[in-house]
Image 1 (cartoon, rainbow, N blue to C red):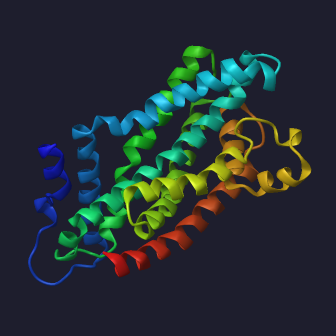
Image 2: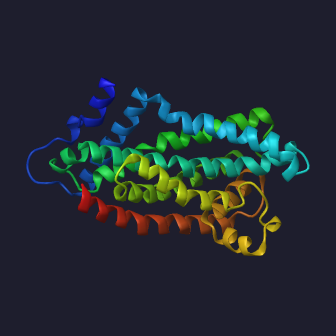
Image 3: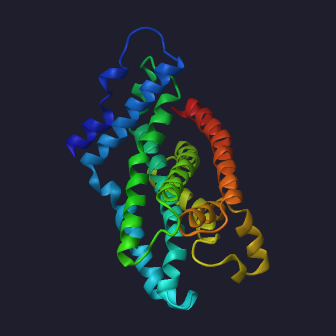
Length: 276
């Protein structure tokens, strides 16, 4: 417990300086990366932070493939290739909640008060918190693909397309996590961040084509699923991993990612200036 507290409150020497706040772009990038490394180091002292990106997707795959796979599809062998890309997208989206929770925890503990006294860009702590969770996103993609292949999943396209699918999921996660950053700045406690995040994410992830074909849903639900950004992401990953349309869903996914950054990053920075 003592080691965790020290990691949470200790500021790396590389961002300590004297003089006025440094807002130059190179300095902001360097400070953001240093604070991102601080987030990564915390995993060493709290390895349980990886439970939601390792054990949880495995449980979801086992549950839906072997319990619901026969009912949704003809058999679980046919359902696994359909489900795995969706689980990858869903798990990474849920993993972004960790960013908002950790950010809220740092603020309530007063860690960000110390950051404000340092000559660094005001946005560096936020950008660092976002970049620091990249390791968690990569871990969950590796775990899902490895476990899926152990069950019989195979990539039907190419290694390049598979790498593009992983990069697209990573890009979407880095943009979507600004939503959880904004929630983390608005909520009063870390528990509130989780509650608000679930209310926001469940309609997105379960109201999509992650688990079943859009054509099997009622008409009113299909209208929502077709414009859902998670649906576009899942279609993109499926096309890149097992074949199918790629161009349109990828461009829609990139557009959604850009929209999340433009809207929620600016809202998060404003909320941070008011609270931190």
